[in-house]
Amino acid sequence: MDQSDIKIDKDGIWYYRGAHMFRKDILCVFFQHLKIDESGRYFVELNEEIYYLDVEDTAFVVTAVYKTKEPSNGHEMIDVLLSDDCVETLDLNSLSVGRDNVMYCRIRNGVFKARFTRNSYYQLAEFIEPEGETGPFFIRVNNEKFFIKNS
Image (cartoon, rainbow, N blue to C red):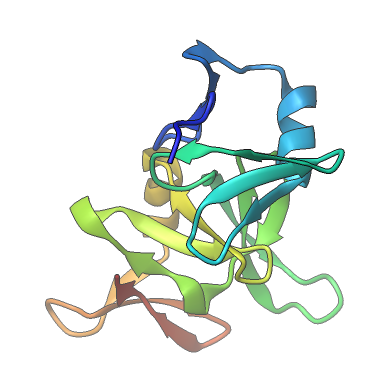
């Protein structure tokens, strides 16, 4: 398969023919039209055209983590800020650790996988506890344990 002119590196940085794509307005359009096919290839579908992307790891990265409370009932939740500047409540059941101890989660109702940056991982690590002396590891929210899986 041919290589794409658009690449996303493991840190979520977009490139067009090697040049850094930094304009948020353009990236927002791409993120809004981003899809993934059955074989796991990312593409942008725009104006009835399909543009496949070379994605080193994931198209989305988690750039920040916040513990918040639901105003109506006081339930705790963890929100994540994504590379497209959207905030989502973290699906704690989707947390996993991959190769090189990189943390991942699922976003957009489980459609996409997102990679935690080093900074966002350290923010999340504040909430991680071991079960016993050596694990497994979990995050406790509203007195419920959510175990982190190995990918």
